[in-house]
Length: 173
View 1 (tube, rainbow, N blue to C red):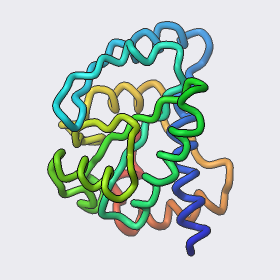
View 2 (cartoon, rainbow, N blue to C red; view 1 turned 45 degrees about the horizontal axis):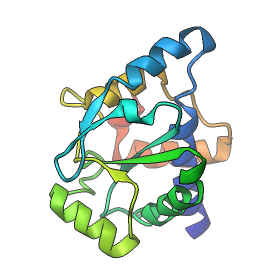
View 3 (cartoon, rainbow, N blue to C red; view 1 turned 135 degrees about the vertical axis):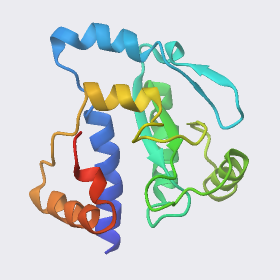
């Protein structure tokens, strides 16, 4: 089960990482649009995405009360190992998945720092789906929709979990 959880965490990160591959004809315009976003950090400061031009951006949904909370450790390791090579890890807490991020922004920040020493950029808690979805996530879903799993067995396992606990997330993008 631990291998499955670790694989699922890595797979989720890779999906987000690789899903932003946009076809070459549209890439330049979409990159420009990505860099036009501004989002608030956990501290309430506005972060202008233009500062990430020329970097590899890993955008990750996070939650501090789920079975995969240890993903913070792996993300922090990635951040430390590759930040000087141009990797930027951006964490976006979300409470839409089984209410696994119930804390306030201050509570989330304290948890991440106390338990995992998170130094990568964390943003305020957002919705990633529905009518209140953050514009950044609407942009990502429109321009880099999920296209399935290359590993059929992993895809089937995740699909069965989603069918059981969050069937609404299997609809659309």
